[in-house]
Image (cartoon, rainbow over all chains, first blue to last red; front, top):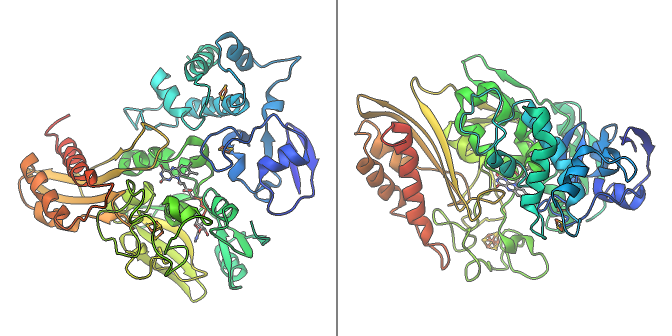
Length: 168
Length: 328
Ligand SMILES: Cc1cc2nc3c(=O)[nH]c(=O)nc-3n(C[C@H](O)[C@H](O)[C@H](O)COP(=O)(O)OP(=O)(O)OC[C@H]3O[C@@H](n4cnc5c(N)ncnc54)[C@H](O)[C@@H]3O)c2cc1C
Ligand code: SF4
Ligand code: FES
Ligand code: FES
């Protein structure tokens, strides 16, 4: 199976039953992406496929052949953190850090969705071309990522700080 | 998970012939099927990936919309025509699951997702007639807060979990199918079954039937539509009760009404008795409440969900009042 992962071509041979999450972690050593529930309920495994956020635990790797996948390792690394990663540090966007890679990948996908005008459950007017960047919107749009440490307020603060400026 | 063969179809006829072999299953976004195969509730030795088939959303000949089966839930909710002409559908989709799951889930897969009854999932520890016909139903005397109040049987009291399907039921949507014997269509309201003595069968489809798309007829003139979902937390949770409604009012009277309830039955529940009671009558709160009483007269609560009867009534009345402009 062939993929583009974090802008690099990757070839992998694995059992058809392998999830995209297990491919990343167990076969490719990209352990930044986390396994929480393994059933779609927590968002810890969130990665971007062609820029769209998905839960890699519910994805069979074989279905995503030929696609471009971005994991937390592709967003920034220790030496060169992305602005959003800095913001998570500055705003206490985590405690244990287990949900953080999923939160950050999810936030990157969410910002793209907001920019192109995708409405959410709390958007008052479905006809509006661009939903407002309210706290309520961010909260609803990030609801697919749980944080067992309860750092949700810090997470939203970080996303607001890093993303609001270029959105307005 | 059992080992399986995998094929990726590029068009509908090819998908149907690939699935020809007994035991084959279609794979959409995989958000339900992969999970159930991992839990060994579903076993299939051959998956035919249909997520790459048409995902088009287009105008059809009679002024409605046609949504191809591989259109992702996000794409349908986002479509401008859906947002302006069928807001109930955008709203229902956006009230379901999470952004990540909506990005993966397909229209076909959403309709055929299976119940979230916890005992159905618990292959090792629980009895479930849907999984294992004849073995019993642990929900009857167990945790049944999310279970049915309408149309259930003593074999199974599960609910259908899709929000989207409830909106489609209210929209009089038509499901387009292709099977080994060719093409046909079935009204969405007739796609899912009541459990009766065959709770293992969720729908009227036969093995090998592929959903190719969903047709939305145009709404009656002046009709407005809305969706409201009540859940245990404000996001990312299945419905306790939901209501999809289409209403048009002329001179204070109900000209046309279509009402569907979610979270209350084994299928999206089209509230035909309430509709009949309302048509042509006054569009008042009292009439809405009386109509819902009629609809819910046959409701049979379980040990843990009697609250749903009142909740369904009040939610439906509130949605109809909003649509009628009786309250904001
Ligand atoms: C944590 C979590 C929360 C959720 N919350 C909600 C919620 O609040 N509301 C809600 O509505 N849903 C919710 N869902 C369910 C989600 O919407 C469904 O899993 C999804 O819509 C299924 O679509 P899919 O394409 O991934 O289907 P798949 O998993 O690929 O398939 C589901 C079924 O459909 C069959 N199938 C797929 N495509 C076709 C086709 N074209 N023709 C014939 N058969 C086909 C498959 O064989 C399988 O049996 C939730 C899911 C999770 C994991
Ligand atoms: S309600 Fe239906 S799905 Fe749930 S345990 Fe009973 S038989 Fe199984
Ligand atoms: S590990 Fe994928 S959603 Fe929890
Ligand atoms: S920081 Fe611990 S789970 Fe979120």
